[in-house]
Image: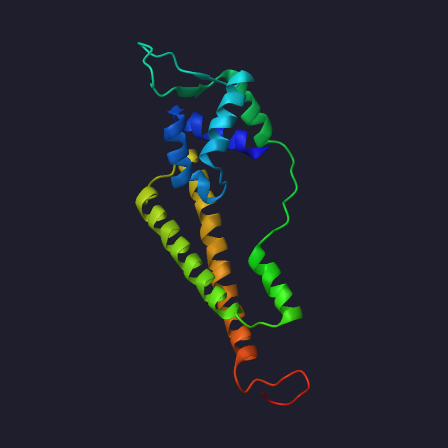
Length: 190
């Protein structure tokens, strides 16, 4: 149910065409709420049918012209209603965690390269978030909108920091299990 609300949020920030909206998702909202371009275009149609957004009237209708959308008062009211709605946290579903659990049954062989790869990916994401913070939130940007956007960014930074610490711990643990002289379950050395 959150994709329509993510789109309403983005359109309230700035009226956009579908193409521009998909690009903005790729650069910002998509870091924490991903959607394919097809999903975004499909949802734009639904939101327009529901009377929550409308295509801005063009000066001259031209074939192939990009529709630009804006949020209608009903869309703003829906977004405000949703912001105040109670919702429980969603359980984490991460395939890496499941793979580690499965390794408890079949053994950790082959797990180290994937843990290292994830560590590199999370390092890169943390660097991206830190660069966004440096560029988009210089000292003195204290408008309510900026403070709330920065708060979301800090959530992303904290999550990436958690993953880096946890992956370093996981790598050390799994590396100790796969070392040639690590004790086997029967107490003998390999």
